[in-house]
Image (cartoon, rainbow, N blue to C red):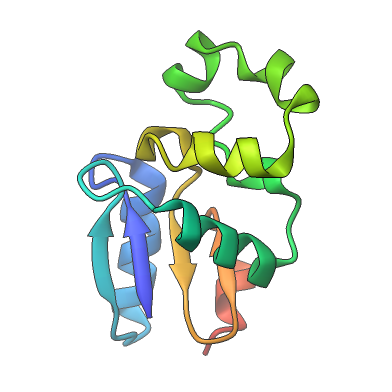
Length: 115
């Protein structure tokens, strides 16, 4: 299981505590130091069943400064995936990846299903 987070993010800290409290074994990856690649994002997006917009950190400073709210609707999925792969701070976190599931953001009820 891969747990991708930003260590200074309070939601990521809450998710990591939940993983630890529930005895999960995982590999931790700092999204800022080691941002997801285009291929990883493409695979995770397909596996998640989520709309691609859910992978964007819409409350992030970078998202806002790049005015992505207005630009995303005119971009192709491929262009959006390439953009996401340029900077981990554009990506919503935490992300939990296992063999057949990808969870984006921390909703405890969804994470409970991983037990």
